[in-house]
Image (cartoon, rainbow, N blue to C red; front, side, top):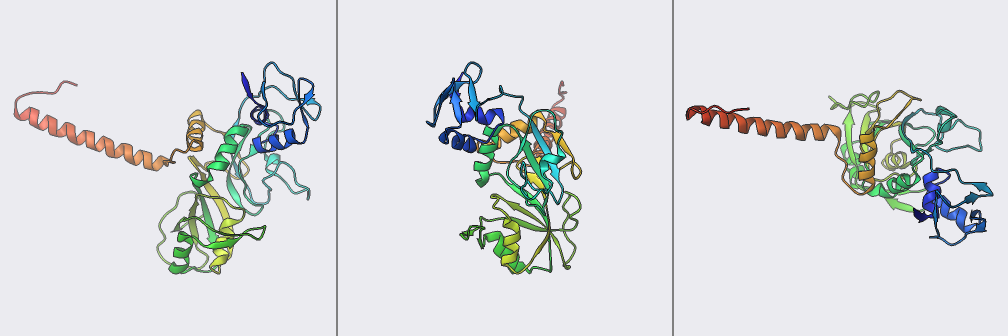
Length: 295
């Protein structure tokens, strides 16, 4: 089947689609022995010989999807020039190579999606406008309600390159215990509180910059949800995604709204209560008329 070269390269796990386009433009890719620099060139991954830097592109490998709990003190890259541990050190050396989708900074921890499905990863990154990400955030001091209201509405922060950006509206609520993903309503104000912060964008160090904007330092950040995925493994551990989770991710990447498991269960329970109520009314009326419903 004919596909664009950059899509084939991304699907093989060698690079993201954008990086593959850069490789093609740089003349690093050959198709059946001829250098290709034109974007949009098509090839058949099964029949054509595709080489990158003179090395044959491996045939399309089995797609893998991992949910990793990144500990503090690891960088979200394949390698690090400073020699710091990377998230790749937490995974087996054998088998299909996977890559992080998005990032968590060195001091942050929590849920990180790893995959070799370059096409899906690219879609999820572009889908930042509608893929919610939830974090447990421990803050130094006690922000007042006005400060939290400003963060919810959006504040202007300065990015690494010096540009200023107003953040999109965020969901923020006070929680009692940041040691687990279970968020319970706080009983009262106290210093160094935990918040659950849900963003629909993911700029580098965004949460830290947001709270700094209202005069408070962030002491700890832990991502507990990415789209339909919920953190459920210990620090440094990982697991394969289920088929259902992968399908949900693909739907999210296609623009569908994320519906949390708890919300789905609530809707299902409400539907069941409606059905039960209707059946009781039917039975009551039938009994009054001398009929018995056959199940």
